[in-house]
Image (cartoon, rainbow, N blue to C red; front, top):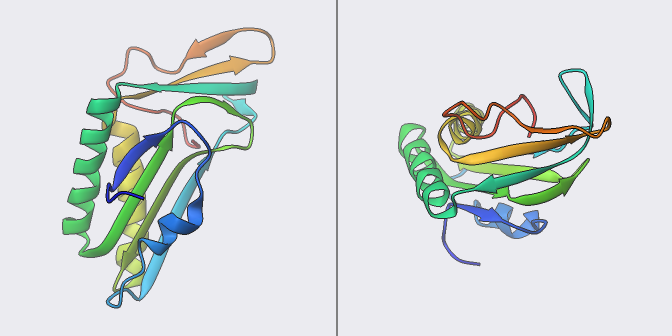
Length: 150
């Protein structure tokens, strides 16, 4: 595994090596967030979705977000991976993990990272609905991924 803090993955992710990257003698806390593909959005049944991205820009901006979080929250470590491609209901779409000396910083940093990734990183979500329709979520927005879940 390389030493990137943020990257895009086109296949399911093994979480054990990611978590091990966050182990540190200074760490007293670990927090993580997993975003999963859910079966509904705004009252509509969802069959699955596809994430697309401008990879070079997404990975550069994602790395900036994690570097900012490491400094802002005095983290021991931070890692985030976001899936791209077609995902089925229940699949993990994004994972964020952080370690810190104290739990407060770990929780706050985890929330900060996922919120900033969704706001700043160019990753777009295309949902497929049970009625046969499909659509990009907020295609006119400058935001990255949208919604409360993945």
